[in-house]
Image (cartoon, rainbow, N blue to C red; front, side, top):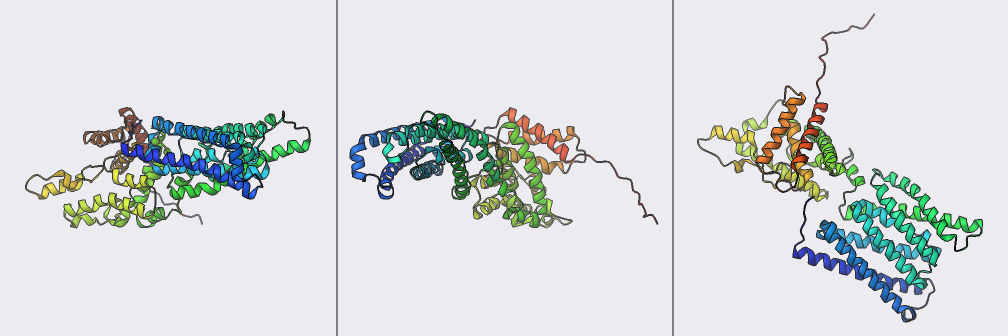
Length: 488
């Protein structure tokens, strides 16, 4: 795992963001008091604070402690969150939305179970790592319990309801986070909501038995409230997730699949304007997805990034071999000009991705998938035309070298797919020798020094690419040259 260090600027910015976020939750408590007075006929704010000020202060202290623990969790477990202010904003925005909606619906139905209590967990499962989501769901569950129990006059939630709400939020959230990692389509989230209905209903019924469920009507009410929890949670998730994906450029599995569909604008452009590049990208995506799965990286993210790694070729598709027919435009160009055209596709791809407001990760892949490798064909061509030695850097890509394992995989798969097309003998032995030589060359040129990929992982990547390529370019039988006439 890559070791991430927070610099002083990151620490100051993340601390300030968490302090402001915690202050916002406390401010929400005051707003809830005002709403309680203005819309729900409760005591006025001054009276409430005078009678329950100690409870409000206690809630503020406990919320501060929980948010502090959340900050420390990310310090030790996932510093990447603290390095991105947008991720911190997401955390607190989700908390604000979940708490406010829970308050409003709790006051309306006078029942903890009728609130969208695992909406927060559904969103956390999509926007954060599993471990992060589990911890954040725990924090949210405790905040909900604290508000329900220590400020009972504010929420109107009874004791049994409060504990039922806590267990529903905590247990249902854990199940949602674990189950949601298997969901690949938006409609699948609806099915998860139906699955979660069973444990939610069980928790509600068991915890409300001591409170006196004596009639069928009371039992049906609890069943209805549990159903509302699931329905509201899934509805909010379906409504708000696309907004979070767009505003924060989140790469959820849903978004990744949409970006690689035939309806995606840049994919359409590749298919029509650079069909050779498109076909190359499809095969590279297949290789990269398999490699990422084998070494524990995100296969969906790797596949999508591979689709977009060569989009810079759209600027001049005819200048690249896979899109040429019989005429090679570089035959009439000086090698220096050819090198400028070829290596510019990395920068052009990053620019195109940013113009279409696609994720920065894709732009990084465009810049990094060739690293600082020399463009050997034109370097050799220039050497033949020159009298003395040439600076190889003038005939190399500008970089940077890969900074992620996915970028390293794409670098290897991109070269392996292109080079394997020139092999007359595509036996596993020949393909294995080719891929091994490509990896060794990149190791010698220090292309993997910044991505923390291990030799064992490179070995796995090599084996996977060899297996995939021999499957894609397998040998075929020779069909006999025979013309069969139609019977009369």
